[in-house]
Image (tube, rainbow, N blue to C red; front, side, top):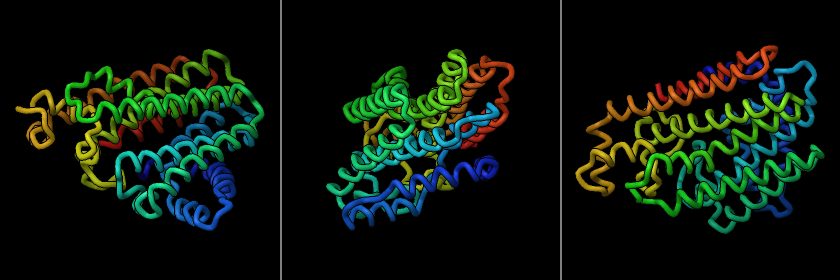
Length: 311
C-alpha cells in the first residue's frame, strides 16, 4: 500500500510518538512474556486506526496531542490483542509475515498475552482521564467479542443471510474504527453532529476494510494480507464472497463453493466492487455532512486507499 505509506509519511512524527508509547507499554514481568512482546514489535502492521485518529486531530488547529497519542496507542493495543486471539480461534499459522503467537509460543501463552495486552490498552485510556472514553471502549470491546462469537457459532452456515454477515462485520471489525473516529473527534471537542458523522464514517470505513479483506482472502495474488489465502473457507468463516458463491454452488459444501468461487470469479468480483462503491459513497456522505470549516481531504484520501486495495 504505497499510497498509505505516503499518507503516513505526512504524520510520521505523530506515529513515531504513538509507536514509542506502544513499545514502552509492551513490557512483561516474565522473560517469556517480554520475549513475546519483543517478537510482536518486529511487525507493527498498517496502523490505519492510529492514522485516522491523527488525521481527525489535524482537522483542528490546536488538538491535545498527548491524549490523542494515548487513544491511538490504546486502540492499536486492543487491535493487537484481538488479532492474537483471532489467530487462536482460526488456527492461523501466519500473521504479518511471521508465525502467529499461538503457533510460536503455544496456545496458553497466546491467550494470556492477549488478555494482558487488553489490560495494557485500558491503562492507556485511563491516562486520558475521561470516563466517557472508558465507556465507549467498553462498549466497543463488547461488540468485538459478540461479533467474534456470532462468527464462530455460524461457521459453515452457508445459508447465512447477507444482513447477518454485515451484523458480524459491524461488530467484529467496524466497531473499532467507529470508536477510533468518534473518540478522536470527541477529544478534539468537535460538535455532537461532527462526532456522530465521523463515527458513521468509521463504520463505513470498517465495512470496506473487512470486505476488502474477505475478497483478498480468495483473490490475493500479491499477498496483501500477509497470511494464507482461502483461510476463511478452511475455517468455515462466512464472508460475502462465500455467500455469493454458495448461491451458485450445486451443493453447499466447501469443495463446491471453492469451485463456484473460481467459476464465477468475475461476477463475484464485480458484485464486491459494487458493494464497496456503495459503502464508499456512504462514507463520503458522512464526511460531507460535518462542519464546512473542517478540511477532510486526507480522510477522503485514506478512504480511497482502503477502497482501492482490491484493484
